[in-house]
Length: 588
Image (cartoon, one colour):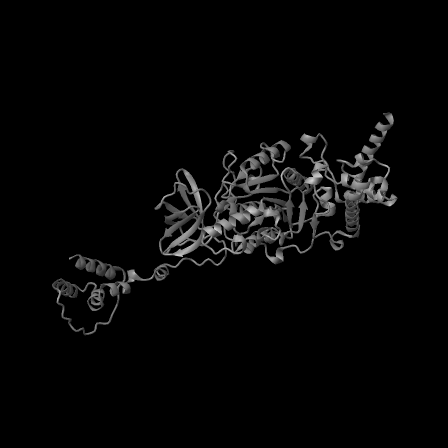
C-alpha cells in the first residue's frame, strides 16, 4: 500500500505542476499479475490522472521512472528553468531590479556561509546579503554560486552563534557605505558602520565599495609632482600626484608622525582631505592614532576635521580585512549618490573631482590586505599558487591599485606601508605591490638614532619622477649633487673611523663638512610634533628647498656651524640660527 500511495502522490504532483501533453495512441493492455498494481492501473486510467508517470512505472520500473520525472532532473537543469527570468544586469556593480530576495542559511563553516535561495532569486556575485547574529547585524558578500540554488558567501564579521535556517535578505547591490563630508573625523568599519561611539553618520550619500577604475580618457597622462612640504621627500624622492608610495620602516622610526604630517600638510597646502585605512591594524595602534590626531588638531570633534578613518582590526575575520581597503578607497573617492541610486549610469561625482582636490589615502598595511585575500581564497577552496598565495593575487591587487589614479580634475595619492616577510623582496606579496609603486620612502633606524627626523634615508628612497624631463634641470641637478655628496661622505666614514679626519685631503674634508650640514638640513620640525619638541613646525615650499640645498653644496653656507642646519626650514632660518649660535659663542 505504501508503494501505491507514493505512486499516487507523485502522479498527482506531475499532473498539477508538470503536465505532459501527448497525442493519444492506441496502447496495448499489459498483463499485470500484482493485484495492487492492477487496481492502480485501472483507477488511474479511469480518472485520467498521471497516466504518463504510471505508464513509465509499469513499463520501466520505479527507479528509471523517477530519473525521468521532472523532480529527478539534475540540479543545473532545475536551477535554470525558464519560468521566471531575472532582469539582465548590463552594467557591473549595478543594483539589481525587483524586490528584496530572501534565502536561508544552509551551512556555516567559519567565515564561509552558504545561503540557499529560491530558483528565481539568486543574488549576483559581490552582492551584499543582510542577516542577524543575535542582536548584531551581519553582512555577507556573495563569492561563488555553488549550484542547487546555493551561494557561498564571505562574512564581514564573526559567525559565532549563527545557525542554519536563519533568514537572509539580498540587498541587490554590493556593500554600500556612507560617503561625503560627514565621514570626516569619524571612524567606520568595513560595512560603513561608525565604531567611534559618536552616533550614526548623518548623510544621505552612499556608495558601493566595488567600482571600476576611471576610464583611460578621463585620466591625466601628465606626470606632476605632489608637493608635501617635507624637504627630503620633495627634493630626493618626490611623490607623483595620483601615484602610489611605499613607506618602509620598522617600529619606532617615526612612521606615525610622518603620516600625520603628510595629512596635515596636504590639508594646509592643497585644501584636500585624507583617509587612513587600517588593514589588519592593531586596535591599540588605531586608538592611539585617533587620539593623537585629536591632540594635534587633525581631527576636531567640534569643528571641521581633515581626515576620515576606516579600520579593519587584526581580530576581524578575513573577509573584513580583505574588503576594508576598498572601503577606505571608496571614502577617498567619495561618490555622491542617493542610497536608492547605485547604478554607474547615475551622475556620480567624485570628491576627488569635486574641486580638483588632492586626496591622500593611507593604507597600513598593504601586506595584510594580500594576506587576508589569501585566507579568503583558501576558505573558498581555490588551489593556491606560489608560496601559498591566492591564484588571483595580481588581479586582486590590480583592481584596487588601478582605482588610485589621477583624473583631469583631482587625484588620489596613496601612501602604503609595506611589510616584507622575512626581508625577502622576491616574496610574491611585496613583489606584486612593487609593480604598482611610483616611489619608495625608507625610514632608517640608523638615521633616527642620530636624532634626525624625519628619519628618511636619502640614498635608499627612490622615485620614478626623479627625472630632468619631469622635474627640470635645476631640481634634478640639485638632487643628484646632494645624493653624490652624501654617498661620498658614506664612503669616507670607514676611513674617518679608522684614521680620523686629519688623514683626509682638504677636498675630502670640505666634502665631509658640507655633507654633514646637508644631512642635518634634511631634518625638519613637524607641526604635529610641536607639542613634543616645542619647535614651531614648518612647511617648506619646493622652490625654497631647491634654493637652500643648492646654497649649501655650493659653499655659500660654509661659514655657518653644523648646528645651524638642524631642525630649520629654509636657508634663511639656518642663517639666523647660525648667527645666533656664533653670537652666543662670542659672548661665552
